[in-house]
Image 1: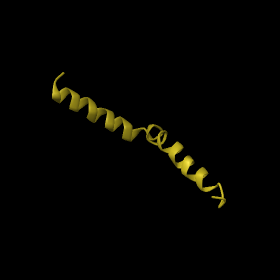
Image 2: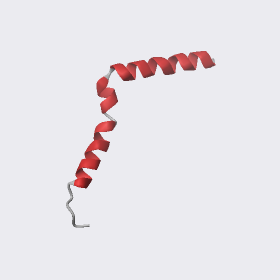
Image 3: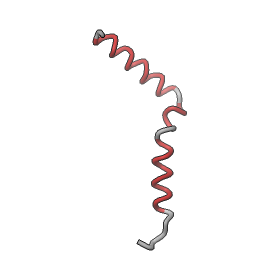
Length: 45
């Protein structure tokens, strides 16, 4: 494949990714929840 074509596809995907907020937050939410749940455990360490 042509390098320009790959770059154009990548740029289009990045624009779509930034427009669709659900796609943006879907990978972030589990990380945030994991951090919150790990801090909820208390101070029994």
